[in-house]
Length: 528
Image (cartoon, rainbow, N blue to C red; front, side, top):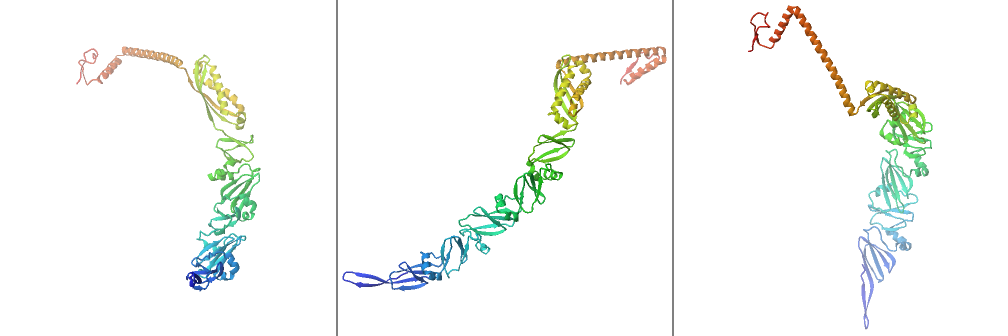
């Protein structure tokens, strides 16, 4: 603050006011810079100052604001560097430098190509300059100090957990791995990023894996297991005995160190051995899903046989069990043949008998395949072939017989069909076990006629039986009469038998006279 001391001079026409003195007051928490016109003169500490000059001016600064916002600081340092550095802490950064400045309990960052000044004495000032060409990483002793200061310009904090590994990228280029810990990097005019990978996942998604393999072999050797395959190789990767990955030919992939890698030459080991089948096919669903698209599988049940074709050529018969082959560079076809006795039904066949009666027949046959390879190579459709030949055999056998002949002996049809079909199937390795006509269905009017014929036949048989029974009964009565005629005792016994039958049906009998004339006298019967 300046005060003017005024002297007045009297002239004939006017008074001239001349200011010759200036007084400045600096408060206790301030500091001032005295200028003569625009030239630096000196610093003024707190207090009152009076000068006998009118061209002086003062600019004061609040020391509670630690940074000195001084105009033309660069010029002042050049001309009055010694005086300024007595009161100022100067921080200057080049194009490849940054700085951290501690002001009491807080920190600020200074970016490249900057000149910053901070008041000495009132607040403790500490500055540290970093060369970005040497390292972008903030030294460890500063990381904890600035951890809670999220507003520091130009700095990025990263945390790598104990189960992770960090990959440091600058301008999208890999620089180095980061073990677990806390890191801070300068990101001034540069893109700094850290990508973390979990160590407990043995096959993580390594970013730009091919670049890591080609450009950073030291990192790969130190942390990774590289699986790189030729055109005739495949690989099974396990972690602690569990299948985690399958690699096809000509592929390569990175895993964390510690995995087990089994490389298989598919030129010599095209089929899977029992160990791999148990692990990959019959084991866990996860293992099967890992490599299922690269496998050709065939399960042959008991009482069956499998036929294996590779590149359209027959290779071998497969016994019961699970079989698997690697697909690469080959085409596989397998077919399972049932060796058990099988049934085939030929139903609803409408055929005319020799006497032109329309019939509908149902036929069944049992067969088994004795030579699967002969059957498969000779027939494209085994069931279709059997069905067609049974049709032909049935039509031929029925067409040669009259209706009465068919009804009298169905066995003749069965034998005829059996002989025909066995002759047809012998050359194809098929054995026909049995042939039989199940049903012969007649038209409705033929059924009615046959019913009447059967009814007449049965009625005639019934009449004959009845006449034979009546003749036998009459003959028995005649014989009985002859016995009674010649034997009175027998007659008396017959009378007693009749009396006994009557007595069974009444409660009381009164007989007058002797038993000799019992049949001629009056018999009075009373019922109570």
